[in-house]
Length: 360
Ligand code: PMP
Image 1 (cartoon, protein in one colour):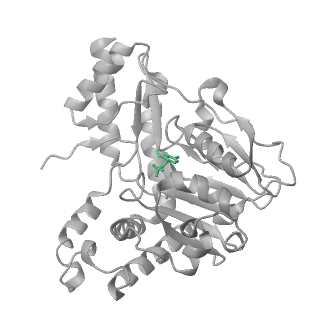
Image 2: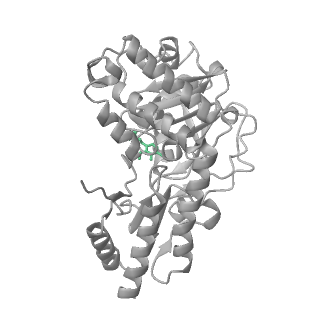
Image 3: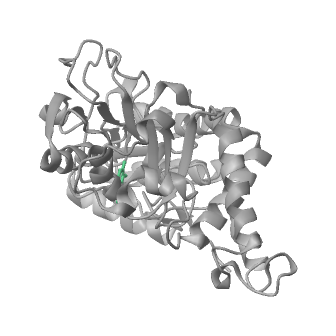
């Protein structure tokens, strides 16, 4: 077996211990003689899997009792529609545009109501976060929306925006469980799990109970009503059983590592190794304003397309894979999620240094 260091933005690296545990349990889950892939979502065994996963997530994030946890499908992209459908009573919401995913969410919301752009960092290719201390938020807005960690551009809200009392809705797909959160600061905090938590095909949404209502926009499909999902414990129809199971294993793994305070500490340590190197390099440059840097996604460039391509090719041969940057930024991007070991980042930096010396 030869495992690489996988810097993919998502689907992405998972803890090896979790993959091995899933392998051990693949044919016979806890003595029930079948795989999780084969069992009814209405069985007692699966009920215990989903209940335990929810409780472990509640423990990790310290989720208050007045929040529901929903296990949903359709990717984060489907929530771009579900959120306005469920929340736009006044048919108006504010969006902070910090990258493609916030932009797509805003465009989707504008199908259902007025999606106002409150601020944007498009002028500098989303390489920073706009000042969100005094946004033009009006009384009739139903919520304020952010993408907390911008996977493509490598920015992260280190301070949440001043929403002037409006509910904050946050997409945390690429920083899910990478740091502790005060859940009570959000109306909805949600993310696709395929970056930091588990296999693709599952979105976890943590929603304050009063936002789960009957009076949604009239055309909202049954499946997209938060109330349908909440009333049925995320089992209105057949959920993504496999992903819920693996996420549950990851939650246990996170608890065993010491929880989210410990994960944040490790993530800070790992990111510092890479950023410290970038800050002194004469060849590689980070693309993000220092105070807005993400701990999860680190884009960087050289000043030559040829060098970028050579670097990616040679890094791949060294077992450092999926380092190509997003097509809109170019260059490289290292995604260093929870499951990326420190050794992976150290090996990447050692290789960058070697490459710089050989090609500088
Ligand atoms: N939001 C963010 C921050 C993302 O990084 C992504 C996927 N890269 C999405 C939303 C879209 O996720 P999905 O593919 O699950 O719809």
